Image (cartoon, rainbow, N blue to C red; front, side):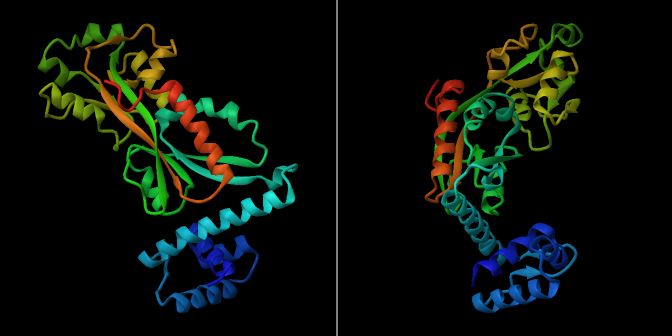
Length: 294
């Protein structure tokens, strides 16, 4: 195998077709097809299921991760060799972060990253429980995740605990006092998306195992605003409450949901990735609870 073959594999999967890959790489579809066939012959596996769209096989997933790593290392090396005085020489750095972190502590990384003239951040919002799949597919270099089991080829660094506190507006509590199980069962609750299960765990501890009225607001800022305006009660990140924007909210009880956060990244020798890791660890330490805190 060679770099051009790996680049063709990555382009076909990203563009979902041989024609799209050809357009991206500036070659003919025939050239893409030849590179993929040669790569498949060299490794002895079918790597792409031809169709609409084209998708990778299990063997293709393995090589796809390597292809992305090789392309990123190539870009990083060329940028280091040629200098970093021009924006075109910056290395694009795809990362995954959950929405609640992006709305709170993670944004404190931005002023640090503003001084880095050798890379650009390409952030993807992904739930902390599923972002490891993006790492596994090689779509991101690193991810803030709730999983401390390392993805193959990755290292894990402890960040801290994001505590979620149950709150509601005074106006909401006038309509739904939440003084007994029936009140909890009938009161509308807010969730971020279908992957957001912390409200269900919280309700289960109240003895509520039946469906409750549920509003879905897939934005951390929108979620917080919806709670503040009385649409429902919800579990909001502790750093968001500390910001002062939710001073009028009422904490419902002393229960909470803790989500442990970790940083997983490719285990590559990379000064840029090391720098990102150091910034995340320092920022998380200043805004999250320690993992061993009560």
